Amino acid sequence: MAFRELEESIRRILRRLGGLETTKADKTALATKANVSHTHTASQVTDFAAQAQSAVRGASWHPHAVAGGTVTFTGTGAKTADATVTFPAGRFSVPPIITTSQTASGGNTFFLARVVSKSATGVTFRIAVSTDSFTGAYSVDWMAVQMTSTAATG
Image (cartoon, rainbow, N blue to C red; front, top):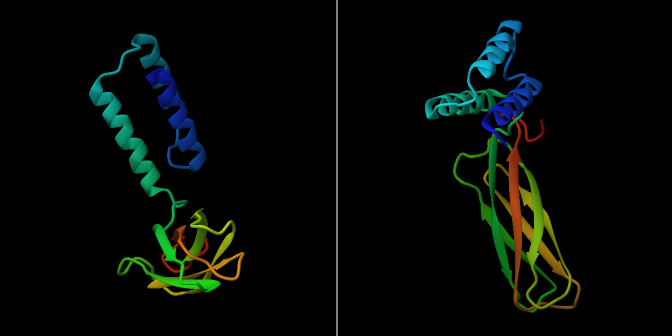
């Protein structure tokens, strides 16, 4: 994709997000530049990238706080096991939304991961296996999201 096409695609996205207003004068200036030259200096590319990043950072659609990781459970012969994760200090002001994804099985065919409890400082996960007991290691990827400064949803 040529730079000009990329630039226009980014501008369309930013306009849809409300981060970049385009006036008739802007459109005329862009059309004039396009007719005069099809090359862009490195500084023009950098300036445009900085504008796009600034507009995206100022948008209200991104989460207030996010954390994620992987927790590994080691089989002890029981049917379930718990593991607690502590979030980075001060990351969340309310209990965040937690999502999980089972990533690896250590011997049993099926296992289920769920959230047992959560707070602004951490979360406890529980896994249960499809057999009477489990051995080996089971990994669960997780992500915690707080959408606004005062609420997990938003």
